Image (tube, rainbow, N blue to C red; front, top):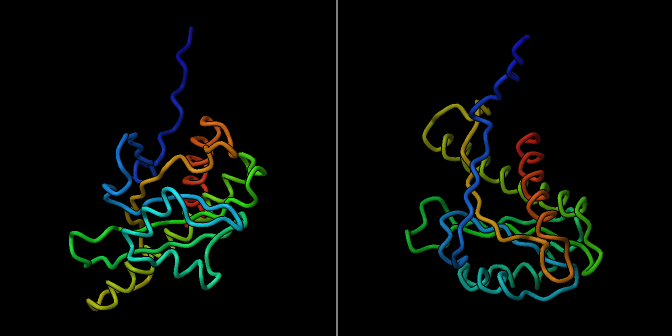
Length: 178
């Protein structure tokens, strides 16, 4: 008999840590990922986030800069040095037309939103290093925490299983892009 060869270990730095928590989204310690359907109003989780972000989501919506179509996204973040009481931010993924969301579209939407958020975090890190006189070239990885509701799993969306898989795939795609 022989022994099975172990598959090569993946780089531990690329590992994604997932924690499932049942809590109120206003208690999140990292920016909250939510979805928004095209031509919809700001309701539910988005409304709560909008209140915590001093109406910045409704401002973007009013200016027609708010995500809606699949592949559109925005990250609304507070400054790194904001007071402790400030909410960390929101990441909004455009989900397209209500009732037409597929698991593949959800994956694409979440990957785009997470890539936008990650790019913003990389930019913040570079600006921080620039202010302190450090080299601003990309030189490794940074931790980018995110909280999320089960985006796309509502009554007009995809199954719970598909929503979870889309989120994990979206994270992987965003990490690969960044």
